[in-house]
Image (cartoon, rainbow, N blue to C red; front, side, top):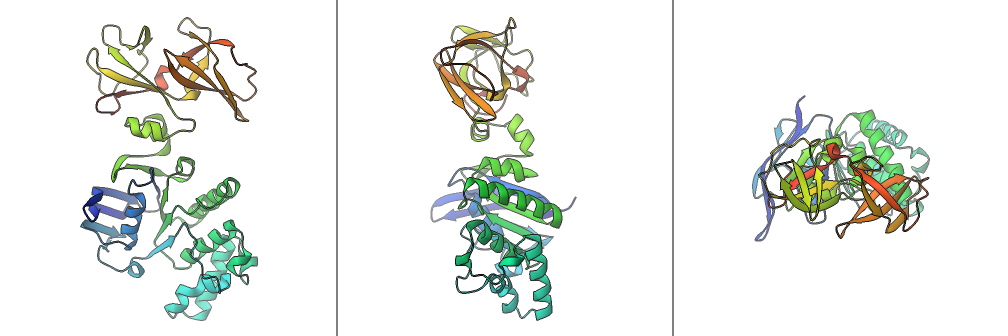
Length: 357
């Protein structure tokens, strides 16, 4: 499969502050790529560099085989959707959709065709004569997406387009964007700090921190095999549980204060030496209530009902951790239960380098 967008050795500074550092990223033709990370990690800066809204300090941007590093945004064959909608308040939806086309002297019949197609895809046909002030947040964002669609862009760029919407609308628009990608097959690059958006939309996710891509992989791989402590901690809701301890090579176990956890079922990528400080990570759903001989006894300290699931909090050698159970679970505060870790699905990190072992 050919690459649709190539970012090569890209560096960008604000004054003396380095934002992006020698960054490489290849995005395949028709791929839905999500740039994910906390505020200030450089994801929106990277998107703006691809769009041509910022000048690079070093590196190249190639779109569909064309080196666009120093080309204007209008010459890059991109469509961009912003967080703030950026609609003209005095214009109708139809006029907002057609504005760019009219400015480039596109024939009226082609404008009409494009608006018809985009409004049908986004289910906004009945809104064409309304002004933005007469629309809900979700409808405004659909119009903003439509304005990008009518440009016949090769690549669509989304800068946190759902962050101004409430939870229900976000879920609805996520579905619409996913469906749109399926129907159009265009390359899409999507910036968000919301891991649920990233997990549900992406073909691949680039998890970023301090201007560097920490891990680039499928949502499933990033969730199940995070490459670093940062990625493991950032992905997952509720978050992964972490325990600090030492690796005991003689019996392949994890020593947590006075307790030993057998690691025979864990597949090490790099086996640590004896007494290495490690961090044992396990997701709440990979801990089960069990009466097997490997199980350990705990008292329930907190219960969080979450509808379909119930989260219970326990404490292991003064380290609090959560267990995800079915919503129908009837455990009560103070109940004593036995639990077992699914070692195969755990993640182990070197405490010093914070990289996966």
